[in-house]
Image (cartoon, rainbow, N blue to C red; front, side):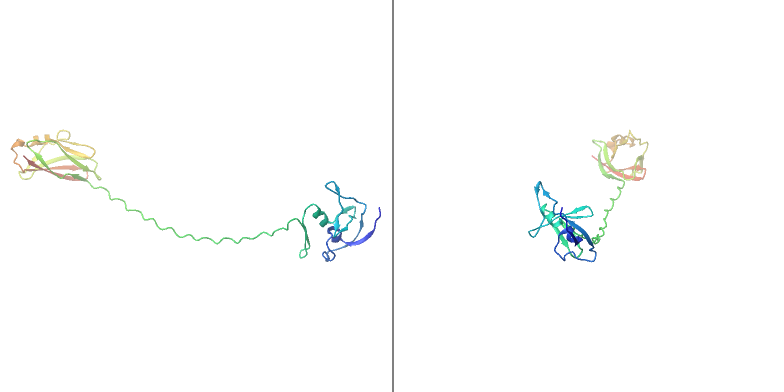
Length: 227
């Protein structure tokens, strides 16, 4: 093998860039050999690296074979570039510096509008209905009084007086003269049996005040005797 000893710049040997493009203070002088007898195949076919139409021979240095990187890269479809500012050989795409994103400004949230709570409905008060009824002496019947209990829980007693006569009915009993249901008190017609005279003899227009005594207060129903 015919060898020719030459002194070359290292970057010229390795990358085959134009003269002067790789000159710099880090370049060192070396002694290498042009190996004209080394054959190269590319995908099974003979191939010779070229530089502007001039054949290039491999270089042997310290027992290793070096090929011109630009010629080899272009032969295999790999882009080869050179960045003079950073003295960098670029194979393929150049590295893209990461873009530092500025932190997003904090979003100031508007304070939530206070939720206005609807006022609670007032608690129901003890009530009865009706508070006045007509009672037929010719056709007596039970009378139902609707009750709104409120805080009350029970009927403790029932009393009755005839104010015009100063008469108070004695012995009114639950079950016999009145009954208590879930939402009503029924004054039974049998209450009239406690009147000291026959009901038919009671003058029309006579009023009888029946008092329902709850555990939280009293409610009065006025009965008016009618024909």
